[in-house]
Image (cartoon, rainbow, N blue to C red; front, side, top):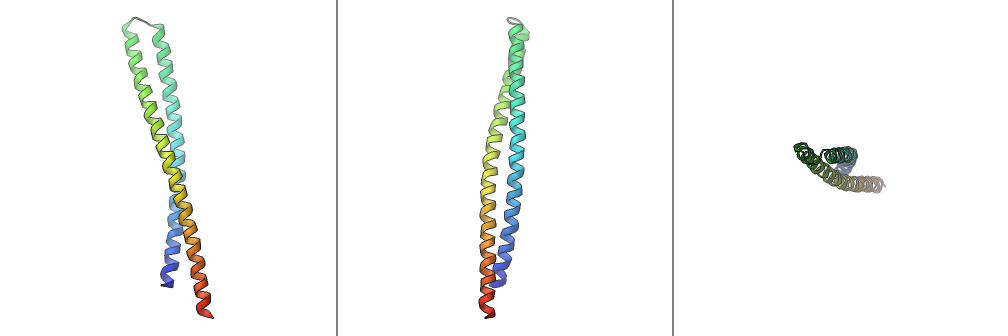
Length: 118
């Protein structure tokens, strides 16, 4: 049982580090999605401004359609960024919990070995 406790503690520690790394990756990926969303939103606004210059022509319709397409992509990217940021926070919290659990289990394992040696 004592060997299992030590093994489980080490396993929890490695899983905690892996979850933390995954959380960091998700956070940076969410930042990239957010930057992408801003860029797409900027392009949509520029196309709307261009369509104002050609009011009443078929070009206006094409520019407005493109603008709406970019706007929809920007909303999707923003939603993905928010979702990934929530997953990053959950992964970070899970990582901390696993690392703390492994520390507690290592301490319990060391204490039980001290008691056995007495």
